[in-house]
Structure formats: C-alpha cells, structure tokens
Length: 422
Image 1 (spheres, helix red, strand yellow):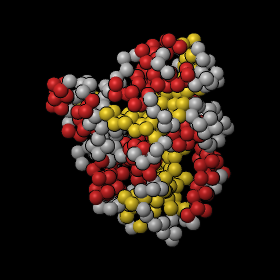
Image 2 (image 1 turned 30 degrees about the vertical axis):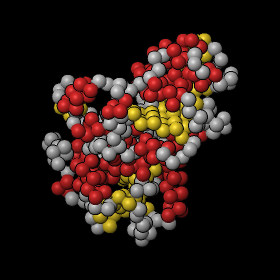
Image 3 (image 1 turned 180 degrees about the vertical axis):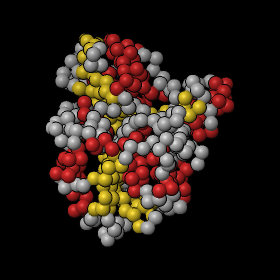
Image 4 (image 1 turned 90 degrees about the horizontal axis):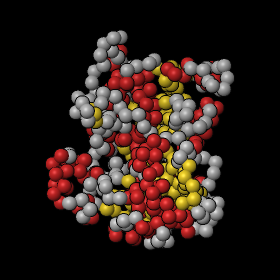
C-alpha cells in the first residue's frame, strides 16, 4: 500500500496509515495536513482492497465544501491508480474498479440507499448530528466498512464524544495533533497567530481544545449559566403537566421538534427529535410514539408560518394535512429573527434541559452562531444557517409563540432590539 504515498507524507501520519483498527479519529490543528492524509489513505485502501465493486466516500459538511477542499486533491493523489474521473458527480473510478465519491452532509438523502466500504468524514464537528448514526453508519454494516473522523474541535459535541470513546475502545485509532507539538508551523508564525487570534480561537484552532468557547455562539452565556446552575441534567417528566411542541419544518432539510413542559415561568426541555426526508404523517407518528413511551399528554403545538404553504404532493396546505392527522397547530406569525433570539434568551435563563433526551438539540443550541464579516470587520447581523439552525429555529418558534407578556413583542415597523448586547 505505497502507490499513493508518493505524496509528501508527513511522518506524523504514518501511525494512522499503518493502523489496523476499523475506526479512526484525528483531532488536528489547522494546516496539519489531515485532509490530504485521510484522502490518500482512502485511495490506498480502495485500490488495494481487492473489491471490484468497492464503494468509498469522502463527506464534508457541505457539497460545495467537499468539491472546493477535496476534489483536486482526490484527482491528484489518485493519479497512480486512476482509471476515470467523473466531474459532474465528483467521483473517481480506480484501476481496481473501486469508486470514491465526494458528498456533502447537507443533503444526507443523497447518501441513503447504498453501501460503503469506507468513509472519511471531514470537519466532523460541523456535520449535523444524526448524519453519522442515522445515515452513514448503517451503510457500513453489511460489508463492515471502515470510517475516519477528522477535524478541529468546536465544543463538546458529537466529535468530542467520538474522541472520548476512542480513548477507551480498542476498535478505534485516535490521534491528536496540536500545533505546539507537531512543529509543522514555525514558532514565529505561531506567535504571530497568538497575537492575532483570541485566546479561545487559538486554543480551539491550533491547540485542539474542546473546552474553548465557539466563536460567535449566540446562546453561549445562557447555556453556561444553565450548566453552572445545574439546569442541564436528567429531568423527570411530570405526567400531570402537558407537553407542548415547537417545530421547525423542513422539506429538503431537517424537521426539528422540541418537547417542552411549562411549570409557572419555568421551562423544561424534556425531549427532542430531528430527522429529514419524512412526511408529516411520519412526524405525527413520532408524537404518538413519544406519548406512549413517556405517558404524557399534549398541550399546544407551535409551528412556523410556512405551515400555511401547500405541499408539493397534493393540493392541501400543510396545516390542513396536520389537522386531518389529528394535530391542531398554533401558527406562529412571521417575526424578525432577532425578536425570536431575544425570546429564547429570556426563556433559557429559566429553563431546564434534559442532557440525554435532548442531546442533539442541546448541541444545536451550543453551535448556533453568527459569522464574522471580515470585509466589514464586524459580526453579521443574522445567525448562520447550517445544521444547528433547525433545532435553534424550532425553539425560537416555541419561544416566540408562547411568550405570555405583550411587552415581549415590539410594535410593527420598530427596529428589533439587539440580542448581541445582552
């Protein structure tokens, strides 16, 4: 397995290439070379596997990101064993007849319905929770395919949990590459970066810290206070209190549902569900399954204004479909995103969150953030739209719809108060 290693392999990655474990995770600083190393490993294993129907994949958070980061690398390093490259579908066929595909996790439905003999998941901390467990892991099952997870930390999310598991499980290879240890980036450049970056940014991007705060995280302070005050933990469900739901509806994207109990001004996030590619009857079935599992009764169901849109498959609106399925929605009027963010921030300071049943939703709240506009040298006014938006928007729908006090709403035409100054 040395045909592809004509690339300038950094000695740091030799243990990774020579591993025998089925699963691997590499936590590495920026510019360490993890993408090139994992792609070359994928090419080597595909070429030498002996599987003429071998199917392998590189998955990035977004399809455009996979093309931008990996396509040229894939063609370049596969050249010694390459038969064909297919530009339109971003795939190559090797001389062994095995194929390697590039995918984006933003469209998980494109991945479904086939098998994989091996996969690399790049920038895994940015990939929506559930893509691995619900979509990719089952694709590896029948042929016992391998998987490599690579990236830089962004809080204690699913990437962190895989890293912690890898420390104990002999089926995993684990490697952490900190800039202070690798020697890849010269000391004077590291010193310059330290002065140009915040302490948290440098710790996360260059020293692989899972504890550094996510830059631009919108609910960071509220969630930090909740953790310090012991409000993120296992929560007992009070069956005498009705459970409300807050939704974010997706068609090609994910649909997210929060399950919430309200006791006085206290809010309890007792469960969370998120999936994609399902119809409204499937989500109503989820409501019924949750009711039977936990023995609760439902209160009100808060859904966004786009529930009034008609479905693509019939002439009914989605609200009509839900009513036929026995769910009477409360339609939350369209509101400014910042108004909804303020409503969630007020709510989170009196909210308990179940750390197990709401794990994916909690990750979404932690990762919900704004991007920095380098051109304007300022934070962008609106949150970033990515996998975290679905869970965050579902809670925003509930918070904006359930708020009891009219003082929490602004007059039409008035500018929204900035939540960023809070």
